[in-house]
Structures are given as C-alpha cells and as structure tokens.
Picture 1: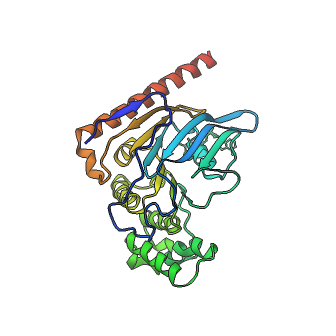
Picture 2: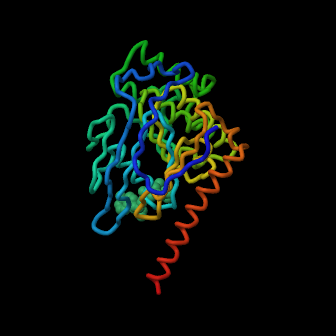
Picture 3: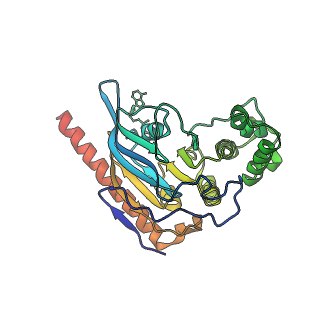
Length: 300
Ligand SMILES: Nc1ncnc2c1ncn2[C@@H]1O[C@H](COP(=O)(O)OP(=O)(O)OP(=O)(O)O)[C@@H](O)[C@H]1O
Ligand SMILES: [Mg+2]
C-alpha cells in the first residue's frame, strides 16, 4: 500500500491514467467506451459563486477530477459544498470562472453523462421501486427490452430483488437511498455527484452503503465526487479528499490516501487509516479555530 500524501496547494495534478474496472460491468458500459483519452474528467477553474450581492458562498476554487477517481469533499457546515456540487453539475451558474466536463464547457444544464444523487430522499412515493428506478430512462425515451434489462440489472446489483414491486414507504431509509442511487446509475453516468447521500443513516448502515458504493464505483468505472460530513467515510472511500475552508469555501488541503482500488470498509482497521482521519481532523480543526478567532475580532 502506498503511503499517505497531501498537498497544501491544491494545484491540479497530472492524472495517473484511466481506471479499468476489475469486475463485470453491471450496467453494461465498457470501460473507456466514450472514446475519450485518460486524463482530467471535470475541471473547475477559478470558480466563485456569490448569492445576491452579499453572500460569497464559494471560491475561488480550482479542482481537477481525474477520470475514474473517487474524490470526497469535507468541510465545515455552510462552507459551500452543496453550492460547489450544484455549480459543477450545471444546476446553478458560477459568478466567475469556468467548468468543463469531458472537455466541454458546462453551462445552464446538467451535461449528458453526469448523474446527481441528493441528500434528501428523492424517491417518488407513488411509484414502485421498479418504476422509480426506470423513471429517468422513460423520460429520456428509453423503452423496450434494453430499458427493462438496465432496470433489472440495477435492481439486482443493489440487492432490491425482493422489493421491486414495493413502494418507498415500505422500505427502510437505507433501501430508499439505494433506490435513489440506482435511479441515477441506471442512466450510466460517467461522473456521479453525491451530496451527503448517507447523511440520514446510522453508522453501521453507512459503512455497508459505503462498501456498496465502492463496488459500484469499481464496476462502472465512473468518476465519483462525494460530499460528506463524516471524516471516516471520506477516509475509507476516497482516492483523494479535498478539505474546504469555512465560507467562502476554498480547498485548503488535498489528501491522497493511496488506498488500493479493491478496498472495502475493512481499510478502517489499517494504521494508515488513522493517519488520514487525523490529518483531516487537524486541518479542519485549525480552520475552525481560525474562523472562530476572526469572528471574535469582528465582534470585538
Ligand atoms: N440560494 C441561495 N441564496 C442565498 N444564499 C445561499 C443560497 N444557497 C446557499 N446559500 C448560502 O451559501 C452558503 C453555502 O451554502 P451551502 O449549502 O453550499 O453549504 P454546505 O457546505 O453545503 O453546508 P452543509 O454542510 O450544511 O450542507 C451558506 O451561507 C448558505 O446560506
Ligand atoms: Mg450541503
């Protein structure tokens, strides 16, 4: 296992290369089938977001997501994490700076190939699990055996076979979140953005969901950006973790974990895991102390 490394200046790095899933592809996409060379997958350059004239929520932020990596973001509450995700996804326009996905500028709409999973349970209560998962496909005009096949695969892969005909209110919170993840993944996104998808779950379920997410990440070859409050979750799942400052959120450190691609939650037992969480906590603690000191100066 490679050692932990980190950089204080989050300069975009040269990508090591495209990822190649070691397992069968559950949703049928061959790795590299989009014909793009290995390298930067999504890039934010000098991105800021100011709400109205007063709330400077984000940036300036420079971020280069490497193709196929698992990148997590941690940072104090209200520092601009969800704002970053919205801007990156094309759901909200940046005040300044540019965003590119697969070499094309992102503006105004969520690009084809980008999937978003929100923090809140976004399942439709009036649709069964099967119809929830197939919803996006139907809207995109997919019908017939291919659509059915994709939905069947997704249900099977997410372990929801016994609940395909059930309604969300008949499921646990973790299962509902699995439905939401499956509904996004069935569209075969090449970049998956997740905003605290496990926030409402208990610790044990979060660990299990984390393992599922790792399995999906490996199998699909997608690039994953995960926002989380939980430092252990970020440390366990990620290739790299971006630590944000308090608002306006900027990256103050990027930690590279060096975990092998076939990791599971068992990595939490490794001594290096403790090093990663300690480094994340120290950086966040320093940042919180600085923010508190400057608030005191303003108040005094
Ligand atoms: N539509 C909006 N209009 C005005 N201010 C906003 C809007 N959306 C977010 N903000 C402000 O921008 C800042 C960043 O919000 P954001 O939701 O991105 O934080 P966050 O890091 O995701 O927080 P949390 O960890 O609590 O989810 C906050 O001060 C918030 O009040
Ligand atoms: Mg948020």
